[in-house]
Amino acid sequence: MFIVQNISKKYKHHVALAPMSFEADSGDCVVLCGGNGAGKSTLIDMLSGISIPSSGTVSFNELSLEKNRKEYLSQISYMPDDFFAQGHLKVKEFLSFYGSLRKIPANRIDEVLSIVGLLEKKNIKVNQLSKGMRQRLLFGQALLPEAKVILLDEPTNGLDPYWINQFVQIMKKLKEQGTIIIFSTHMMDVAAELGDRIIFLESGKVVKELENPHDNVQEFTFKLLTMYREMKGGPNTVS
Image (tube, rainbow, N blue to C red; front, top):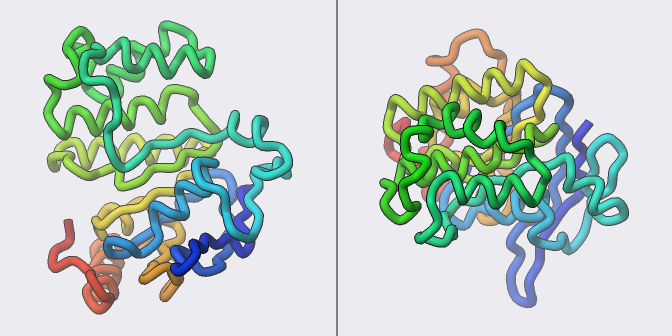
């Protein structure tokens, strides 16, 4: 069980995230929605251990982020919302570096490259990849350790329709395997297809929270889109 209790982030003159709580069990997917500055990245950064919460607790299977940081982080995988890799690295070198940090078997590197459609690009330098390919490489980095909990910040940014569908299918397989997934997105169709719980954030506060009935994806997508449009900074399209 992944448990977030009253987690918040405050700066001297700004509340980036008001206290919020939620739980996720094996195979659950929690989707964070909201405009720019809503608090989505702030939350994911705290759950991944990058940023220290101002209050509250985070734990996975009774491993506390605060008290059992090393053990907690060994169960977590994270994908940031931007690409900071050294451009001179080759694609396989990039994944191999992250794999070495977590003692990932060498054969897993090519396996992941195949999953994200970059096996034929493994000897290409990172700075020669398109935006969508770089995004898939970041996603591959998050898939490497086969973690129990995967945190993804705007994972579909820059992906074309084919790879958005591939992303959805990969996520569905992870859910079937019991992986807990928490990700942020502006794409309400992706949220409707994958999310079991949808949390809407605005100006650092939870404004709406819905359980997905999983009975009609199109109908639920339209409901989410309507709600999102009513929020400050909401989008005008499904994706």
